[in-house]
Image 1: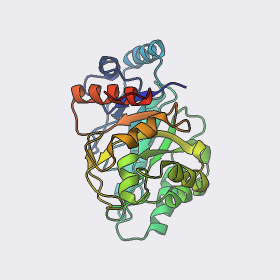
Image 2: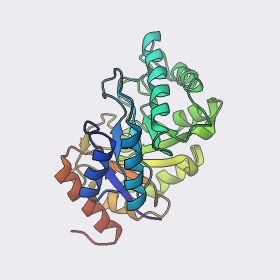
Image 3: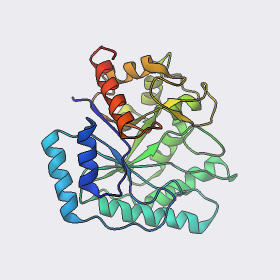
Length: 281
């Protein structure tokens, strides 16, 4: 399977424009926000624009795209209106993504804001049960979180509980964020295989559908979530070499969310491809 590397791109110019940006930086996948990351209403996609992007991706051997829900979406908020917005936004976004077909829809599980993780997980399950639909082509991805504040998803067990609780678990997968799992206390620097073994035992590696590749500004177990450029943080270049060379992760879309512009992303994608081939540039 191929190595599908990309980054987070701006959707302001439309769908095909993101595809052209991806090609220009050597990417074969990318992520984008389905609406303003701070929430609000979203425009519908132009079917012609969507079809043109699909054609470009098919011609360039792209892997699946990883759409990202707004940060304000919190399915386990203590406020009913916030939970209702999350359900509405997810339902609308998944309907729009049908124009692209087979897209991943990544979201932060949410913060229980003092209600307790058990209640938070119950509310997330309730919200997901209103939107998960096996007839849709997109798969919803729970993102691994760093564990700051009252975030749900700091441990694999919490994600597993959400998956086990929904009526349609076949519609759910996981996106593993390297900065987040490191900050949550999983030692992917010195024991990547052990962390993958634990993921497999708790959740199942078949559920792992995408990765966010981010170095971290903070030490192991800090629960802070501050992204850094590849090789410039606590994880280091060797960790990412191990990831892109790992056969169990091969073929999954790997998306950079490092503090960069397009030029910086192009350099990181080139570096990761060199690392995957056993060279370092």
